[in-house]
Amino acid sequence: MDFISILSIFVLACFVGYYVVWSVTPALHTPLMSVTNAISSVIVVGALIAAAAAGSPSSKWLGLAAVALASVNIFGGFAVTARMLAMYKKRDRKDA
Amino acid sequence: MLEAAQAQPAWVLLAYLIAGVCFILALRGLSGPESSRRGNRTGMLGMAIAVVTTLVTHIPAISGIKTGTPLPGQDEPYRIVSQLDVTTLGAIIIAIAIGGSIGLVTARKIQMTAMPQLVAAFHSLVGMAAVLVGAAAYLNPEAFGIAVRVTPIASPSFVSIFPQSRIEMGLGVAIGAITFSGSVIAFLKLNGNMSGKPILLPLRHVINLGTLAAILGLIAYFTQDQAPWVFFTVMGLSFAIGFLLIIPIGGADMPVVISMLNSYSGWAAAAMGFTLHNSAMIITGALVGSSGAILSYIMCRAMNRSFISVIAGGFGAVASSSDAAAIDRPYKRGSAEDAAFLMKQAEQVIIVPGYGMAVAQAQHAVRELADLLKKEGVRVKYAIHPVAGRMPGHMNVLLAEANVPYDEVFELEDINSEFSQTDVAYVIGANDVTNPAAKSDKGSPIYGMPVLDVEKARTCLFVKRSMGGVGYAGIDNELFYRDNTMMLLGDAKKMTEQIVKAFG
Image (cartoon, rainbow over all chains, first blue to last red; front, side, top):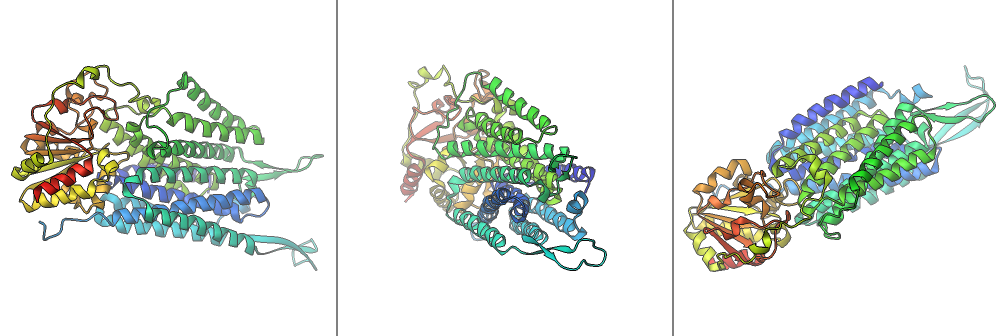
């Protein structure tokens, strides 16, 4: 991909992000933070490339460390979001 | 070399694109609690697609040279062969397993009240991961396909990183490092390891702007000279600026800080995505970056502060000069029994929770109280100020944890008009967000901030530990001395439990 197509994706994604995030209900702002946290760990892609590449042992170790850190975030972020979201309940019919 | 490394097969590009779309859907799902759970699962799917695609296309391999007769069309009598590098693959799996189990255990065990700290800690990890990936890319640029090997005449060949990639890498590492050290400070402040009071260095604006300029200058210079000192100075200075930026910011501004760091972690991922030409990372980075930016904006607006003034820091450092006399002012004090009596008589009670409820872990007691009231035929609602607590949506999560149905919980603008028709406002652990001075006192540091009109309720019950303390903004609250305010002095949880008992 050349720079311009990458830039296009980026700019369009910023707009998508803008509209999608404004539609998030304020009650879910904390889960929003934890899930954005989890997905920003997609940086693990870079970490995996570094860890798998031959040629530089130090680069490989840095990659492995980054894989571990990003994994904490991926698993922790999605799990804690799921835990929070499971708590949001509507009023029971009986109470109403 | 350049073409070979960057030309990814079409299915790989598509897979990353699909992962990016999954992430968009994950955020889209958060428009309502019902769709949010499915959204979260879509996010997980996206992450799985991204990870698996990367693993499959970057299988760790050991290359060796095999000699033999040249293949057709080859001149050399040897071939480069590669075989699976089991050690590295094992190491990657172990790294994922270690990180994953730490993450899962933390996610299970963490208390909901500690959510702001956890989010700050997670942000720091994203930042650090970005720094490490940047450093790895710097040390082994060929693996990322961002360099060419140059062989000048009469000197050894070397690897030259593309100037454009140097900028992207430099920015990615800088933003990552700022995210890391900033989040660490935010974590320490939120976790109570460090005072929430702003720490003000002399000349801090000069130091900060100077450091920032130095970082940008060095990144520009990096395109001319890829020497290690340039790269690592950028990294070091960025760690320093992250630290310097957050220490002067006080506890009350933490919701903005934490949203801002959220945004930074996104931009760091996006910058790395530019380096790696990876659409999943770019889409995610843009999403997270705008998400954090919007949240910061919402938080700033809810405090009527400009983003610049929050970043400049120092809010809440100086106590207002007028409160020396204020301490002796007369106020009405009530008991748990009085409160129970008033609430029982009421037609509608609005509960206004704040950070104090989180500290005292009072959300379950509050919900118990609400249940009793409902049994008595009282209408119960909850009113939440956008900056109540230490992060966006903090109170909503706590109430959800205590099984409060989300359709009883209202945002500031939706419920503010109802206070005038409400018999009792029960303010528990919120202070600055109810301060009427924000509406009337032009000299007040919080003047202009939208507040909950609790004083318009017939009676305002205000739970507070003691009369001495002031809110995080460091100012006295006019509300305490009003005729229709009854102060309930005590721990938020104990007081609520006593009221519950008084019902019995």
